[in-house]
Amino acid sequence: MLLGLVLMAMGGGHIEGVLAVAEAQNKPADYRLVSLVATGVILAFPGLLGIVLSPWLWKGRGRAYAGSILSAAVVMACLVFLVLLVAPNSTSVGSELNIAVLFVGIYLAILIAVWILLAKRDRPLADGAT
Image 1 (cartoon, one colour):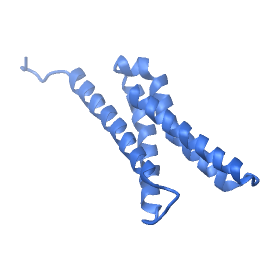
Image 2 (tube, one colour):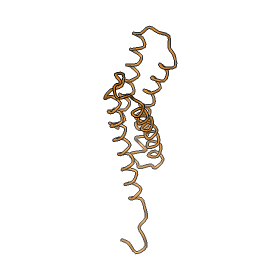
Image 3 (cartoon, one colour):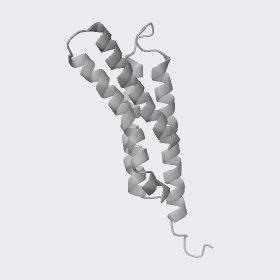
Image 4 (tube, rainbow, N blue to C red):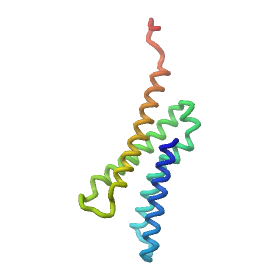
């Protein structure tokens, strides 16, 4: 839940920063603004989903874990794509992108590890095993 809140804060901070810069530039909205705001929404979505699904995650529901893992994996793929696109001397994207990759990676790893542990716990024992 804590990482979900962090992801939501990161996405909200990204949206707030993008809108503040757009307002300061006093230009009409264009596709770049929309894509930057969408990036913030995409970053915040797995955190929101994890918080909404937390009662079912706590109960160990496989579908809740599958949905959370899928949404975090999509965000991780988008972030890795952005990391690969960023030029080494870019001034517009700095360590924030690396921090986002780190937090989403930790969130995804925890979800997958718990899902695997729950699957092992619920698996029936083989014949003759105690």
